[in-house]
Image: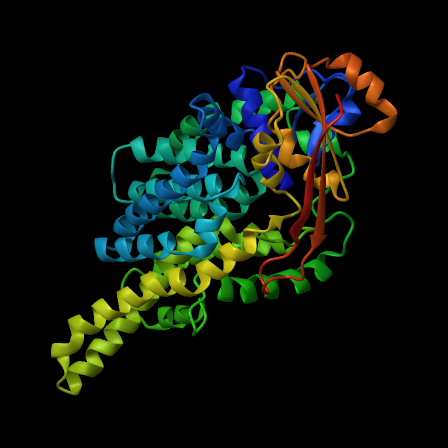
Length: 468
């Protein structure tokens, strides 16, 4: 989708050693969604944290691996967090639940910044929890760094999700409040300084993000009534999460009722639940609500904590089941039942929900498709070519070609531009190449494949034509 293209573009810019690029010649031919293209700047519009990570991927020629790696690290982070708060079994079960979530797996296959947020926030919670056990200052410094870097990745989500976690730790360590605050600040100073400096360089103000340069009228509520947004979005968050995280037949949030059973460490359950709820509450007042990659994406960063909460609830339910089997004299079936339950939890989402969601996303999602590029070699396009992109949805589809351009299109062997008939002569003069090609892409919208996938298209026709 367009957001992912903007993130990937900024990562490519960072990998080339720049904060932004000079505008290309004939800038109108390079316009694409969610990319700032002004008289002096050409860059992505989102916070720089995730593009910094993508830059590492671009440098090794595999930016598509960044999110899968981050998702794997998030799974490990859930295990560490669960072990620190509860025990290894809970950590393992929580990590398993996250690793088989179709929502997590499909989001991890794209270029969205939410996976980086999930990873950074989860590890921040892990080190914060370890800091409450009287350990040396290292976990606090790491927590401060990761929390601040989370702000550089996704500012609003970091504040919503991490604020109750921070308040809980400061309360737990209130006898060492000054020391705790100092170590957290020490860890956070570098990421926050970088963010302020980046904003200042790009916009002239340390608190003014790039997307406000792109559209100065943007605001969190965008003029909508806060009460109207909340009444619409918060119930929808709960409804969609209940159906899209794993797709269990009983509902994904229903097991949380077992957390009402008194048990040790319930205060840590409340700590995790507070992080989840404040994220949902915060984005309930946001102007947009989107289902992307099969789930409510503004809730995505909560999946690590939610996986642990569900793991805790399932273990509580397992304890009740074991007690019942014991009373019935069937305790010999306890281990078999536990193994069967874990097997079901691991396999059901992968067998039932994942194929359905993956098939839906295999279409031209948000009208972006790789089909035209896959057919380019068969069309006979040479290594030096100016390629004009046209079609009935070129405003979106051009994004599929946009990242194929080099950082400086003047020096790139192939240049991909939007077909602007009135500016063809200008384009030919600005980007003289051995060949001139036009690709016309025709798409048609599909009805939503299911209740949690929207904006999918089918490729009707792709026509490559050599014009010179």
